[in-house]
Amino acid sequence: MKIILDRRSNQPVYLQIRDRISQLIDCGSLPSGARLPSIRGLAEMAQVNKLTIVEAYGVLEADGLVEAKPGAGYFVNPPELRISALASQRLGAVPALRSQFAPIQEVIIPEHGVKTFADVYTAGLQAHQQPGMVNFASGFPQASELDELARITRRAMKSLEPWFGNSFPAGDWELRSQIAQLLLHQGLNLSPEDLMITNGSMDALSLVLQTHIQPGDWVVVESPTFHGFLSQLRQAKARVIGIPMTAEGMNLELLAQYLQSHRPKLIYTISTLHNPTGITTSLAHRQQLFALAEAYDCLILEDNAYEPLNFETTPAPIKALDRSHRVMYVCTFSKSLMPGLRLGYLVATGDQQTAFLERKLLQDFHTSTISQAIVKECLACGYYRHHLKHIRSLYQQKRDHMLNALTQYMPPEISWTVPEGGIFLWLQLPAHCDVQGICKAAAAQQVLPGAGPAFFPDQKGYPALRLSFSLPPEDIEQGIKILAKLLTN
Ligand SMILES: Cc1ncc(COP(=O)(O)O)c(C=O)c1O
Image 1 (cartoon, protein in one colour):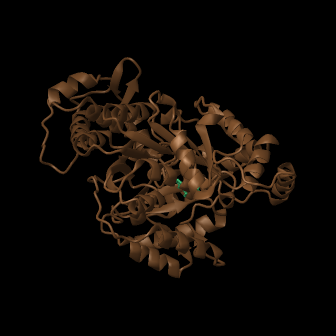
Image 2: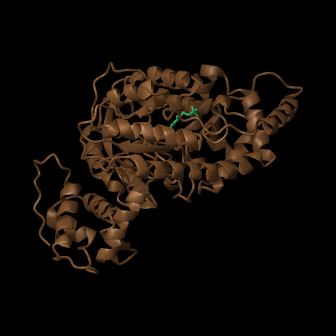
């Protein structure tokens, strides 16, 4: 197989390879059942990094054109399988062909001085309090059963007696043991000493930046990514490198290039149920990302706020691969229990906790003992397990409701991701679309979508919307109908 690359093209090399192989399949030069060249062989022939071929083959697989057979290689799928992959993507049954979810993007290195997270956050909260508003923009979970929670809170308050004084900065030992136990099910084998209880994950993210990042340091993020963290980076005066997200996660070919050229201190990644796209990366992607961080001696901050809301089993976090204590893992009860509790945690192994404990103490002594006692009781009495089971199935129904509404009402040029959990999906709009204009027109009809540009380091990116599906079905139906009409005109 001969592949000629245009090194001056704006199109990333892995997509050029994908396109060439896809043409060879279309014209029959690579018939059904044919084996693609080995990753190493094609990398040598095309004179590219092996990761580039892994990315290209990953996209072909996501497109339903080839199948990976463990230990044997990649094989061309028969035509009927290629067609069914296409069809099922449109129906939203499986997340195949998600590689089409985004246009080709370049790395973003933004200037400072753009709109703050506070503007977006406040607008979302205000919309939530407005009667009749369909708020697709905010990530609020389904309310818990309040009577049961009231009983749990009373027991929790009693458990605090007779000690109402301050507590240790790392948090309650029993709660840390309970969380370590929970994480064991996700493939993380930790001691309670590896965990610090924080005021939500925002606190944990901020502690990591204060401890590891100096003004001017380079930090890699996915583009798009969680806009709250982008604002924290701006405040820390870090320099940001936004590496485009593909359907498989952060583009590893571009990551390798920028690790080499800019030597960043930290990679921020949301490996499971990425905010805003909803994508969960594969084990292979996690292994490659970790190997790159090792090779360039770079820290990883893994923020899996939506991990508890999985509908499917997912690979263990990147933290599970970490023997050199370079990965810090952050999670929260905000999405699975109640954001107002402000309860999250930071996992850091080796001797990393020492610096975090000092920071935490100086910042706010410790996380609220009342919130800690409530979550501890939720975990101890089985409420949390029960509640998670309930909301996972509820959110799956809501997601399916939104997918059906999108399939029914949206014009054909709009595409979307099919997240396997969480509360958001990501809508890609045509290139000419004026996102702010659409959001304004939607707000005039009592619908608030999450404007895509907020999630890009330069607050531009490509036209997109983030939609929360944690709403009542009738709101989803009505809101999608209104958005579809605006996007059709
Ligand atoms: C990826 C991600 N990380 C962190 C947070 C902050 O969560 P918390 O409420 O626990 O501070 C959010 C909230 O939206 C998020 O989406």
